Length: 328
Image (cartoon, rainbow, N blue to C red; front, side, top):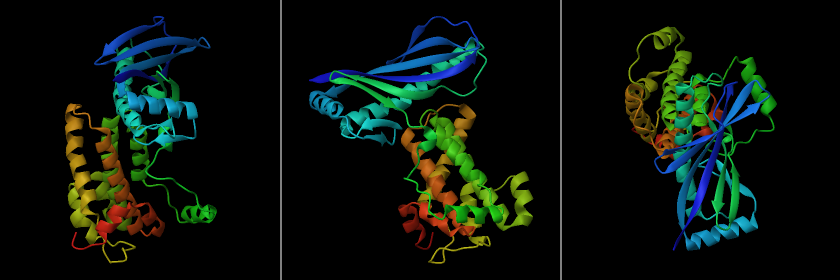
């Protein structure tokens, strides 16, 4: 026998002082979104949005959830969703909840956007951000805080003991963070709440990153790369890269981008065109994750070819295995 439970996502955004209704609720598909306005300091209001959805679990999983709630335990990030669960939360329950995260985020964004558009609400331009989830099981209630999106990445990062020397050397050599990496971080910050924007920005990160990379290696061509139309990124990765005067090569002597990375980025280009021209066709979270991982591999390989030996440690193992074989 299945048991129902409810997941609520809380988000908020600020507007300059506006007279709002005390509260109301609207429906979207199988979700409900409640709107609350709260005065703060008499100058602006914090508008709180609460999206909720009722889900089902089988009784065995429900019992396991109850045990996880009772035991508590160290929290861990459920990576695809970006919030904290008890460590012993059953995977079946975690997956069901995680699948609701993008749906709830879209509902919050749509209602918040329509509210600001329809009533010309001035204030913060940023979309509503989910701050936490409250999950109401029969066995108890879980308050699951969101991990800030800028804290989510593809791996656990560690700053080396000699970071002062490394950063000082990069400063002395005139390096700044490449634009591709800046855009990639922006895409990652949007991947849960706005996967469509994340895909578009992620592809822009790859394209801008390659142009900047080529312009550094061939300064005389920088103006052309920045000011004139260039060949498709897929062609530049495959045909143009091997002709560039790179500063470092792989141990095999190769200078290439793995075929899998190229395929994912080429597909992202097609999806980007559809999204940019129609504004529709929302990508799945998994698809966006794959694109951003491929873009990360591309950018760090380009960093390596620029002479940054350290960059290779941030390229995925699968990409390194693939790029180590020839022909590509």
